[in-house]
Image (tube, rainbow, N blue to C red):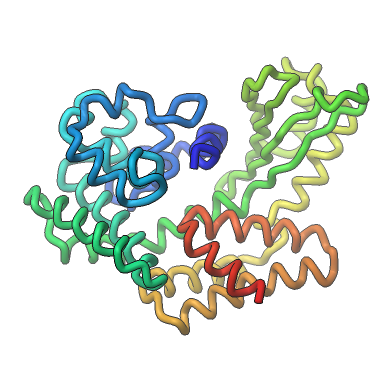
Length: 330
């Protein structure tokens, strides 16, 4: 779980600014929880110390380790507990909004996870999430019915934005051929903003002393120019610059039609609103199309589509992703 939280820290720097300030949308747990993480992916005592033992124990039991706050949902819930509210970042206050908006967002996040746990047959976990929902509604700001309505009205927007995030980036090893040492290679993420076509290259590794460096540009040509001539030009050679151009062509959203992307969103939304066996089979079959095509053809585009699809499924719910992988492996 610590590796997952550490990845949140790295990916947070490439999240769209629009993730903040959306007081009427469902909560993006990854971007929100990243506000409470240290550079090593841990929750500092700054945020755990003010909370009561009862709050920590109740929330920690929801997922991950049952004795620590170590999932995005748990971090979000803890951030709204007495004491922690007074020390949380200003960005967190902005994302949660008023007490009523906060309870709608946190309640719908609990309800979303509970939907999947019920489908997977995890009765004990469902009971703990039901208890957390009662804890939220007992504050008197919202009712259970209002939380469920907020969820149904907001799930499409949340899934659409998650698809945009996962299908508009690729992760790869950015090599530098000027040396035979792998110490000059970078772990890189190339992200394309679907709204304006801008590109962001986020990279780091041993050569940067594990510092995350970021280059942004309004086009692929401009990004290549910045890599070749900008302040960080010593980090790259032509091998790396050409590799970034190649990777840009493999960004899944660039290889799929709008119809295919919308179909993926519809399949996921239908399942998350009604997690029936029939809707689950549609999600599973959608994943199989990409995974089997990649295996049978060796086409890099489908391999990258499979990776993004797995990342998308994990972002929405890791347990559901593991169930799909297990079912399709048979």
